[in-house]
Image 1 (tube, rainbow, N blue to C red):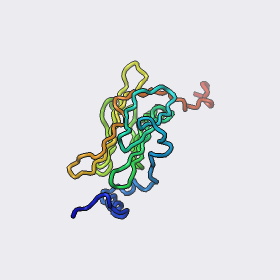
Image 2 (cartoon, one colour):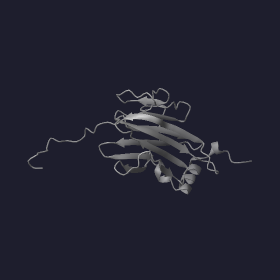
Image 3 (tube, one colour):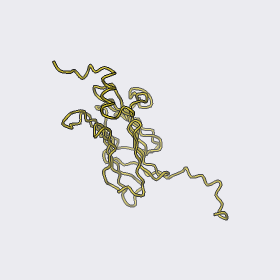
Image 4 (tube, rainbow, N blue to C red):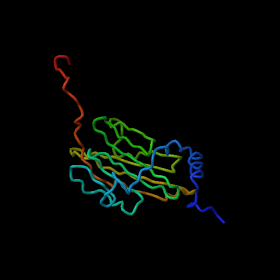
Length: 193
């Protein structure tokens, strides 16, 4: 009879992760989107941004829950990986103080400089030749203090490359361009400068 993927043992899952070359990214504790900090949520979101954000996509029917942190430019999600009893902890940040766009899937991470990132260009963070993909693009309209962001997470377990999970986390979503407030100028002296 065939293999029932629902019955994969923990050792079989570990073997699969090692064969895919991604076991090192699944060593941390699993996230649980049914608990804090992801729950309670509205339409799959826990919005901690003190500003009004109206266009967060409905992800309630997906195996994910996300939160928009109080910085208003960091999105953290927890997503169940079907059949494998694994989770993905994803993080996406537009960091105006560090002049970067930072993203991670579990412990795999990548950063882009805001100085060199081509606005509107789609970039990806890929794990295991595309088994897990996090894709984004950021636009900054002239004379507006907003970012317009698309952010999608895909889990592609099928041999033909079909993605069994696609979570559109942000879809042309407007987030505020926050002012960097972490500069400490208490030691600054114009005469020494």
